[in-house]
Length: 285
Image (cartoon, rainbow, N blue to C red; front, side, top):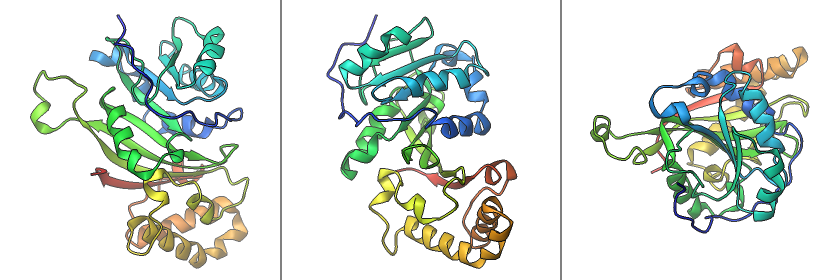
């Protein structure tokens, strides 16, 4: 039995996308926490991956299905769109494990369904900053404790993107209770920057596609501003590495950032593939 029908919360996106635009986002998740896609304990057994705001056609959802099901062939996947015509156009691609439903931040889940992983790319950037936290809070209702959301913005072809990585948590007082598992909050895990180096490597490229909670805070005194200023200095200080290639320069700048006190992940599995992971434990409150 489905939840009571409600008007989808949110606004339609422009809906434009390109094939494999979100491939690097999917590949990041596959490397970051593959076990999240294969968990079968408790409510995770029937939980979904949700592609929120897939656009004019369902290609991003179907591409993710192909990638993630190499790891978990039984993974259930839901594409959500706020535009009725887009949902109707996607129905020919639905099957017993792949669904397309009309909805917004109030996800169109059935009573027994919960979410293990959600991707919301190129969705929240069109909103006002004041709408950011309410949207996050609404989405947290549907995610299982331990689940993740990756939310951010990419350039048109996905060669450069920046995204929040947040995890659903429960307060200590609820961990041993039988209260509704929808109660809880997001905890910030990291801000991730991604490039495939096709446009070279320029720190400024990332500033233009920051998530909504950062894009208007590029001002002196703000942590995101200080981070970018430090990253720019780090690239200048390591510019000699440019002669060895973009990846080597990217890696050297990250290592210099770490020396400046920023908690960035220096593992080669990230830097060598063009991912800078800046860990930021905390909440949005």
